[in-house]
Image (cartoon, rainbow, N blue to C red):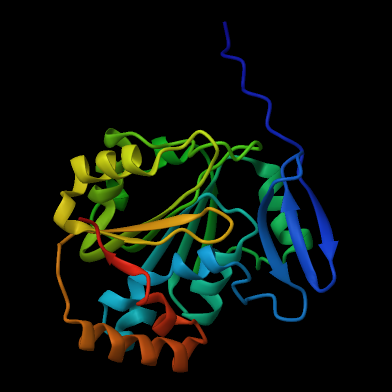
Length: 250
């Protein structure tokens, strides 16, 4: 008997002034776009998903590869491909999300530099072709209720680590009513080691972004501050502000 496919939520959008929000059949916002500046990162937590930039030479960024697990409204995918000019791939389960991003959120068609793979992220990242190739892995996987991360096991995070280059980083958005920051960090630590993990303080909305390095490092504060200034000047991200609430976990 053919296995029945799960029913995927309907995708719709709402406009709030110049900001367009994506929803998956509920009031929960799955992503947003500034209609006057479609490549801008609207939400603070989405900006923080770019914290991996603090750990690489800015001049090397266009030569690197980014992968997003979960397309959302396409914000990270557009920013990495169009602003940072990186080779960028997003893996998305729901075809409606891709259609919505192309129709309502200015996501470009696939090209040599940008592609969207429709499929299960948990299965796609097990393919050997990805191993050791990803410099920036951005994980933001939520269902329509946004209650907890869809994939949040030590095995999943070990698969994520396997994708990364030696300088590669994974950033994860942890949010939800039934999620546990400590439990998720323990699972990430099981895969990466606790010395590889950095975390932001939670945003007002309750999003906590965690970063895990393939190769643990502890750059001096002055080095991070200098790089943060370059990131702000070059790409308009509030990186100097990040450093006030971004630290290795205890």
